Image (tube, rainbow, N blue to C red; front, side, top):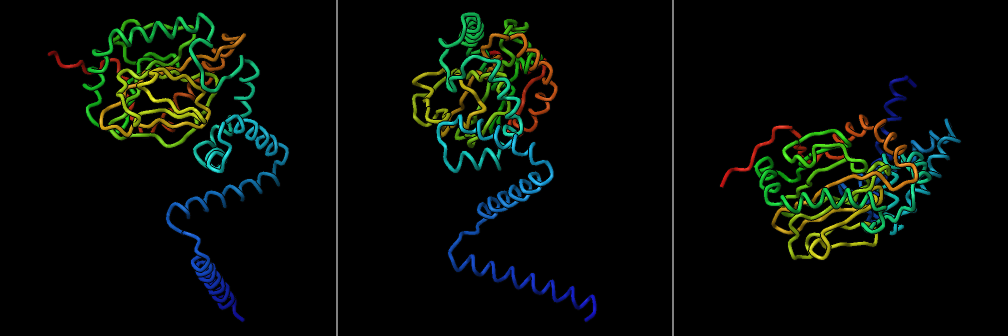
Length: 308
């Protein structure tokens, strides 16, 4: 038999096998829509990569698997969705950083997952209250400036400071270095705009959100594990964003939330701050990955709201 003939027979056999597999899948009623194919492909790739990694670097692979399991099991709802998203979805980067995040846990006080402001040390609380008081006092002016710079679009981020780096400087109270707060911004969702369930990457900081103009409706809320908070009931929400969470706005109007990151309470806050400063360049680059669906507004000369 010629070499070409052998290849033809091999290809024909593969094609026949594929046809049989597709027929069998249809026969047993497994849905093969685009989403199902994508999920199966992700799982197949993950299995192959894991098998290769276990063969080539078994101890390193087992170490990352162990760290990932310890990390992901901190979540409330230990279901298929959680493990699928963490190990094969948008949580993979969080998984890769799990050894570092677990190390940070050892340097920090107890992580409550979802926090109350009273659980922070006094000097942390004072700094958060100071920034929130500015937002409350200048709420109308700040929202008008945001609307002037973000007239349309799904999601916007109006950035005053990003991991200690100054951006918009039209609010003098925000133009200084804070001891614990590293990010000050306003997150804007247009009407009927929500995130999917997702994980943040790093546990050096905690996320502080404050709804500037909560509408009295159950259609606007944030959900983290078993906690589902409606903004009109409590406009302040503080949490560890490496836990699975989502933010929902099914209301027709815009949702404006103060968006802050604060160093985790720790017996060695200066060391955590040094770690964050050391990776701040990488964190800034992560912005493009984790906020690709957002319009980032960070110019030092933003448009002013029209004078009425």
